[in-house]
Amino acid sequence: MKNFIWILYFMVALTFASPALANVKQIKAYKEAYPDEKPKCQHCHVSEKPKKDDGQHDMNTYGKKVLELAKEPTAETYKAAGK
Image (cartoon, rainbow, N blue to C red; front, side, top):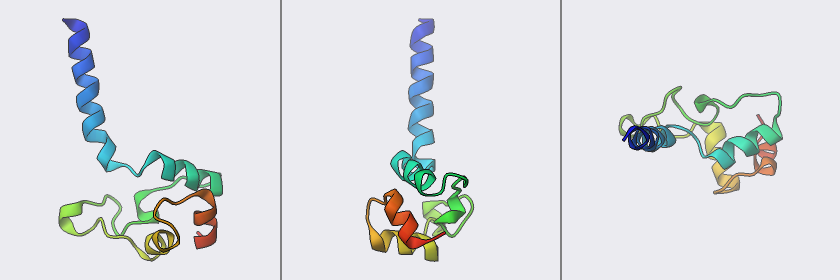
């Protein structure tokens, strides 16, 4: 029973934690392009903690530029967009 509770706990935690973060591939690609930088939400989004319902999930100028270059950004995409 104890194992079931832990499994349930981790499943719930993963379910609610995932949508709040950028895609893992995108973060790895950004870190590959700029290894000394730590990507934050405001690198690409209007707000520091973007929420879809408030319209703050919208992309800022840099985020729009990245998406114009590629739907699935790679390290080369981030380098082409600049910092």
